[in-house]
Length: 259
View (cartoon, helix red, strand yellow):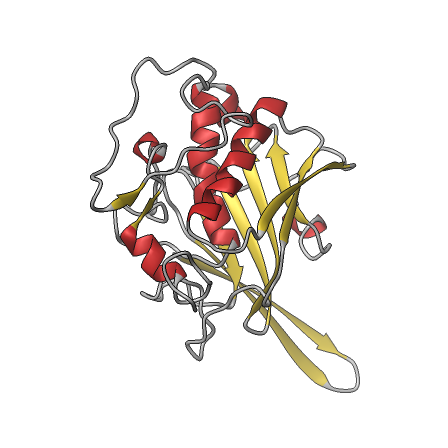
């Protein structure tokens, strides 16, 4: 984990020191950023310095909006990724607004969209803004907090990576052991998993991972979890394992437990 601290002194009548700490994690398929929050807690969630789990206010409905440059076929895959959380969470808190954001192409400055009150999904064309800090990443989730509550999540996808994966996969990934995973099949009217392109399949599994960050999940050491540092296509048919369910029980009402 890298910690980046930006400091600025403002001298007027009184001397004030404002510190902004931004943490980023490197992984094969994803990077995450948060502000002044612990990402190493073994509880599976971001926590405050006092150990309190940081999550969304109660009964929050997470409504995400794509920018207008996001490919239509990958929108379907991302929507299916959001639907997958209905397998665990009792409340359908993740929804996609069909109305697109009327923005210019993302110019690499996350601060222009962070704090705008919109949970945006951005298709990053051209140079990847995090190529130096996180050269292996193909997606980035930026989570904003107010106290111990999450107030906004923006997800960025590296266009070049997904655009270069347009072939149909010829073999189905092996499903995980039934004892350790939960099977989920997306709504076939929205997303045909069997006949999807490699780009759609990668968008699906990476999307589930990124939405985990948007819900407050951090990375964990369990290689069979969707929130491991990297993801693979073995998660197509069983994105969540029992450990994921137990972790979600700590902060959400799930089908297996009343929080």
